[in-house]
Amino acid sequence: MRLSLCLSLSLSLRLSLWLRLSLCLRLSLCLSLRLCLSLCLRLRLPLRLSLCLRLCLCLSLRP
Image (cartoon, rainbow, N blue to C red):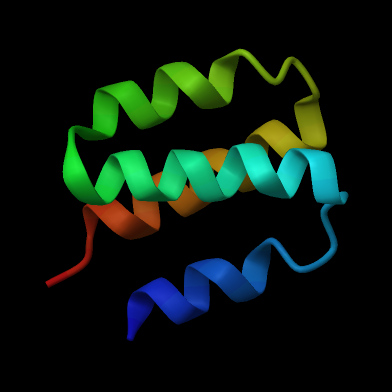
């Protein structure tokens, strides 16, 4: 699944950020990509933000 691929991209993240990402993933699964992206933008950490955005985009491409 693409979701598992998305999760593998975030393995190097810190736990606190991972909790935020997992919440972002759950919200994107239930709600909209825009909300997921807005949560990602609140991270304000360029490198991890890019990973979060990749996760969101990967979820948006899910079948």
